[in-house]
Image (cartoon, rainbow, N blue to C red; front, side):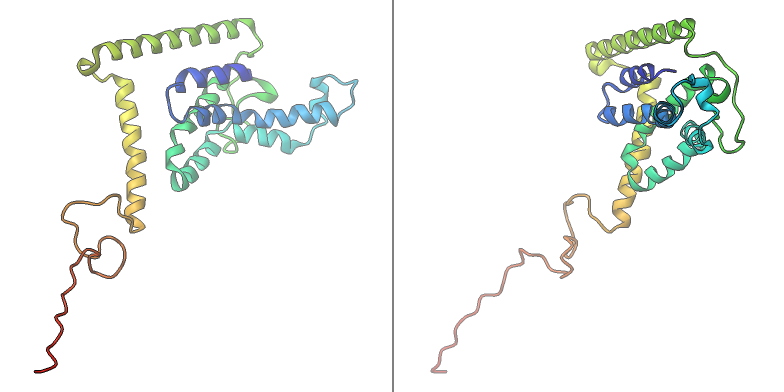
Length: 228
């Protein structure tokens, strides 16, 4: 799929999310490998060759990068790292996931989507080419349908407000939020951090390590009569 379709799909699906920009970034990240191939073809191959001929002179590692960025294996490894270091970014990785899904049926040959790379390294489905006008028509028509459905759903949800019954999208988002927020809270407890003060807080819970409250009253010192 061409880069503009990936951007538009990410925008339509993530436009109301606080991580929209990150989602769009991950949606176009897999084509970084293709960008490297294009740069090499433009500046490091003879100008008289066409693109198909230039490919034969390119280093193999460029295609390895392209295949790796279009692999669910790579995405899984990145997801584990994000899960450990920045769990709030996990939803944005769905942009990467959707990119791979969109590319599987519309790439073939050298640029076939090796979505299990490097296990096995050359497995892909021989699909249509995204340059086919029919593929582009289907893609953009689906974009319009999804965008229209999203607008209608949001309008209906706004009108019904409290009477709105959560649909499958709401339930999916709730599960994702619970998964991510649960990870964040567990990390805070593991690090000994207190999320917020609670009524009836025991002494020493404020983290000063003294075991005493800062508001503890001090005993009044009564001067002694020197005549006694």
